[in-house]
Length: 194
Image (tube, rainbow, N blue to C red; front, top):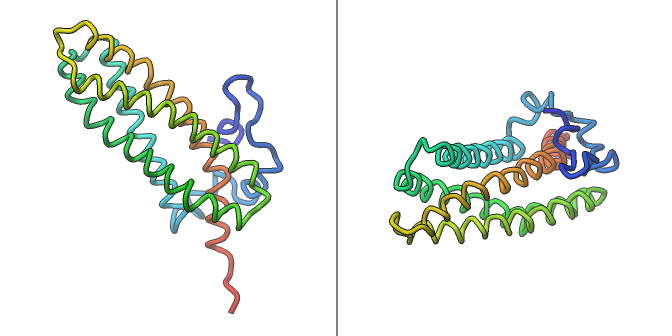
């Protein structure tokens, strides 16, 4: 995946992150990450994002099974509830850690990236709104009876809401990586003063 594909604005194909914010990515492009950013904090960050992408894919695959009638309502609920709990909890915890710890430290370390971190913070708000909707639907799904029409509607609503969250999350994770991974990897590989 190139930086261009991860920084496109889905609404109008305009770059969300310009060259003024991607100067570190120019120093450490994505194709070098497997060799130069796979360890340390950058590697942990990439693994965390891989886990978030995996959780989102699992939920979206389940939603597609529901939409194609490959799983019944009881099976959908049985699988969706633990997947939602794990994924949404993981996502919420990751964003809280970034907002409270990592992003403020990164802003201090690299003030030229402030606009990029503002964008990521705004993404967190949009994603959090989507997560709140999924949590609301999760609660309805957990307490609904399959005999009620509202229970089936809840599953349909969740199947429609999951890809919306997924689109926001995919764009956000790509942009975040373009800013954060080079910053972490380059700082960790820089020679220390004696």
